Amino acid sequence: MKKRLFLVAALIALPAVALAQHKHDHNHSHDFAAGEPGDAKKPAKIVQVEMFEKDGKMLFVPARLEVKKGDQVKFMLRNTGELEHEFVLGTTAENLAHAEEMKKMPEMAHDEPNGKRLAPKQSGQIVWRFTKAGEFEYACLIAGHREAGMIGVVVVK
Ligand SMILES: [Cu+2]
Image 1 (cartoon, protein in one colour):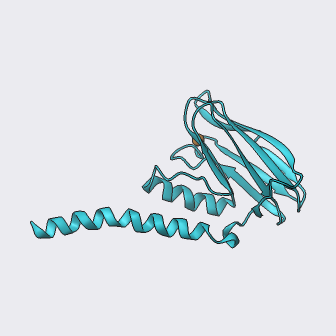
Image 2 (cartoon, protein in one colour; image 1 turned 120 degrees about the vertical axis):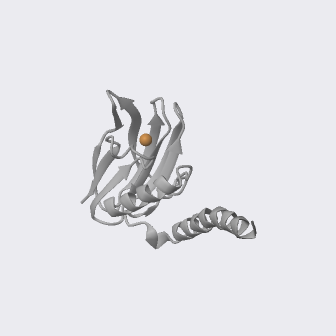
Image 3 (cartoon, protein in one colour; image 1 turned 135 degrees about the horizontal axis):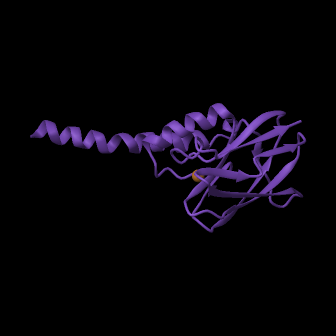
């Protein structure tokens, strides 16, 4: 009986540790491969992004964006679908790793400088400065959504 109790306690403690670790990782600005959090007081290029489901797919519109290195972009996000969606900006590798974590912790929300989760019909904003050239992506990391088509590409030149 005692052994069983210990096991239960360990199972409860594990996700808490993982979550703390996750939070910790995001407190370091160098973790953002796609650039850095923007400054809302500075000028930004406005980009409207819509998230929704259509014909069995899940989409971002637009799904491709080109910016110049150094550009600051204000993403005006709108979830016009029937399901919850999120917008997480990063490298493909980062987003794939993050999506794996999400499968273990489906309720893990992304309200970090590079991500936002929106309920149906909700709007939100992210201000981001693209300080590095390369190809990045924005994706919805809710289980199954990226695979259903919720991925967009940002090319920084
Ligand atoms: Cu989604």
